[in-house]
Length: 124
Ligand SMILES: [Zn+2]
Figure: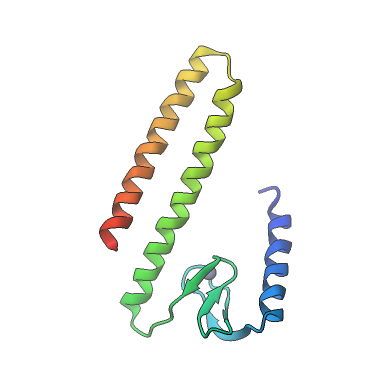
Protein backbone atom coordinates (compact mmCIF):
# COMPACT_ATOMS: atom_id res chain seq x y z
CA UNK A 1 0.00 0.00 0.00
CA UNK A 2 1.35 3.44 -0.82
CA UNK A 3 1.63 6.13 1.81
CA UNK A 4 2.17 3.64 4.62
CA UNK A 5 5.68 4.95 5.16
CA UNK A 6 4.44 8.39 6.10
CA UNK A 7 2.02 6.81 8.53
CA UNK A 8 4.80 4.84 10.10
CA UNK A 9 6.96 7.87 10.81
CA UNK A 10 3.92 9.57 12.30
CA UNK A 11 3.60 6.64 14.67
CA UNK A 12 7.26 6.85 15.59
CA UNK A 13 6.88 10.53 16.33
CA UNK A 14 3.79 9.79 18.35
CA UNK A 15 5.66 7.22 20.42
CA UNK A 16 8.48 9.68 20.95
CA UNK A 17 5.95 12.27 22.10
CA UNK A 18 4.46 9.75 24.52
CA UNK A 19 7.86 9.03 26.03
CA UNK A 20 8.61 12.72 26.30
CA UNK A 21 5.32 13.30 28.11
CA UNK A 22 6.44 10.88 30.80
CA UNK A 23 4.87 7.69 29.50
CA UNK A 24 6.87 4.51 29.88
CA UNK A 25 7.14 1.52 27.64
CA UNK A 26 5.82 -1.67 29.22
CA UNK A 27 6.64 -5.25 28.32
CA UNK A 28 2.98 -5.79 27.47
CA UNK A 29 1.76 -6.01 23.93
CA UNK A 30 -1.52 -4.87 22.44
CA UNK A 31 -4.11 -7.67 22.08
CA UNK A 32 -5.14 -6.20 18.73
CA UNK A 33 -1.98 -5.21 16.89
CA UNK A 34 0.75 -6.71 19.13
CA UNK A 35 2.53 -3.35 19.39
CA UNK A 36 4.29 -2.54 22.65
CA UNK A 37 2.03 -0.83 25.13
CA UNK A 38 2.81 2.42 26.93
CA UNK A 39 1.89 3.28 30.46
CA UNK A 40 0.77 6.88 30.61
CA UNK A 41 1.57 9.13 33.56
CA UNK A 42 -2.06 8.72 34.60
CA UNK A 43 -1.43 4.98 34.91
CA UNK A 44 -3.53 4.10 31.90
CA UNK A 45 -2.20 1.68 29.31
CA UNK A 46 -2.10 3.02 25.80
CA UNK A 47 -1.46 1.51 22.39
CA UNK A 48 0.16 4.11 20.12
CA UNK A 49 -0.55 1.97 17.08
CA UNK A 50 -4.31 1.65 17.67
CA UNK A 51 -4.53 5.07 19.32
CA UNK A 52 -6.54 3.43 22.05
CA UNK A 53 -6.59 2.86 25.73
CA UNK A 54 -5.84 -0.79 26.38
CA UNK A 55 -7.11 -2.76 29.29
CA UNK A 56 -4.95 -5.74 29.93
CA UNK A 57 -6.68 -8.56 31.69
CA UNK A 58 -5.64 -12.08 32.41
CA UNK A 59 -8.77 -13.85 31.23
CA UNK A 60 -8.71 -14.73 27.56
CA UNK A 61 -12.37 -13.97 27.21
CA UNK A 62 -11.97 -10.38 28.26
CA UNK A 63 -9.05 -9.85 25.96
CA UNK A 64 -11.20 -11.14 23.14
CA UNK A 65 -13.95 -8.75 24.16
CA UNK A 66 -11.58 -5.80 23.80
CA UNK A 67 -10.39 -7.16 20.49
CA UNK A 68 -13.94 -7.32 19.15
CA UNK A 69 -14.89 -3.79 20.14
CA UNK A 70 -11.64 -2.49 18.70
CA UNK A 71 -12.26 -4.38 15.46
CA UNK A 72 -15.73 -2.86 15.29
CA UNK A 73 -14.44 0.66 15.64
CA UNK A 74 -11.72 -0.03 13.09
CA UNK A 75 -14.29 -1.39 10.64
CA UNK A 76 -16.41 1.66 11.27
CA UNK A 77 -13.58 4.02 10.39
CA UNK A 78 -12.77 2.01 7.26
CA UNK A 79 -16.40 2.25 6.17
CA UNK A 80 -16.48 5.97 6.87
CA UNK A 81 -13.34 6.45 4.77
CA UNK A 82 -14.87 4.48 1.89
CA UNK A 83 -18.12 6.42 2.11
CA UNK A 84 -16.15 9.63 1.95
CA UNK A 85 -14.15 8.37 -1.05
CA UNK A 86 -17.27 7.36 -2.94
CA UNK A 87 -18.88 10.65 -2.10
CA UNK A 88 -15.87 12.44 -3.60
CA UNK A 89 -16.13 10.32 -6.76
CA UNK A 90 -19.85 10.91 -7.05
CA UNK A 91 -19.26 14.66 -6.99
CA UNK A 92 -17.19 14.55 -10.19
CA UNK A 93 -18.75 11.54 -11.96
CA UNK A 94 -20.78 12.37 -15.08
CA UNK A 95 -21.43 8.88 -16.40
CA UNK A 96 -24.91 7.99 -15.23
CA UNK A 97 -24.19 4.26 -15.09
CA UNK A 98 -21.15 4.87 -12.95
CA UNK A 99 -23.18 7.15 -10.70
CA UNK A 100 -25.71 4.38 -10.31
CA UNK A 101 -23.00 1.86 -9.51
CA UNK A 102 -21.35 4.16 -6.98
CA UNK A 103 -24.70 4.92 -5.36
CA UNK A 104 -25.29 1.23 -4.94
CA UNK A 105 -21.92 0.75 -3.28
CA UNK A 106 -22.61 3.77 -1.08
CA UNK A 107 -25.93 2.35 0.02
CA UNK A 108 -24.32 -0.99 0.90
CA UNK A 109 -21.61 0.81 2.88
CA UNK A 110 -24.21 2.86 4.76
CA UNK A 111 -26.17 -0.29 5.59
CA UNK A 112 -23.05 -1.94 6.92
CA UNK A 113 -22.17 1.13 8.93
CA UNK A 114 -25.61 1.13 10.49
CA UNK A 115 -25.28 -2.55 11.30
CA UNK A 116 -21.90 -2.07 12.91
CA UNK A 117 -23.16 0.82 15.00
CA UNK A 118 -26.09 -1.31 16.13
CA UNK A 119 -23.77 -4.14 17.18
CA UNK A 120 -21.57 -1.59 18.96
CA UNK A 121 -24.58 -0.26 20.88
CA UNK A 122 -25.74 -3.73 21.81
CA UNK A 123 -22.37 -4.48 23.35
CA UNK A 124 -22.29 -1.39 25.56
ZN1 LIG B 1 -2.74 -1.89 19.26
